[in-house]
Length: 117
Length: 113
Image (cartoon, helix red, strand yellow):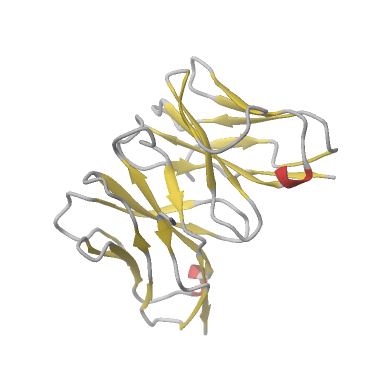
């Protein structure tokens, strides 16, 4: 089974508008971390935001916020006031903090975001 | 910039050859993880090194091997290259295995012909 599911291969948003990128995850662990990364065409994976499974508040970093719904196992990324430079591939990832797989990141297939003027 | 560097940036090899990729971790980080990202896919975990010991391995054959040095830099070695090894190889450094974020380097793009 897929650990991370991103159902939107591509999303389009107009500059200055907000956009939500969907992510659902699958784990039986109680302790885990959720991440969003941005990957421009250059290839570098840029860390955006992190949410721990025990964090009660949704994480925010500038224009990025993570809408964490634990019961639904979803961790959607919200980008407010989109900018042209936000056009890139976005990956959701999960880290399990216990067991034989601890420490590794599981990635989804990504969502290609295009911001138009 | 994250402070994680990788070399070389690009590499072209022939099937059957061997390759070594290098990664320097961010200052203060003692853990390095390696990922393979095929075209159009998300990164796949290869293995992780913590304080010079392998600390977990993904579903990759033994011809993928690694090292971590006392300064926490790391190497990924791939023997007997196959065409399917063509990918972007990313390394990520972190403080510990489960604490905090993993910061990625710019990657090495390997092409096997």
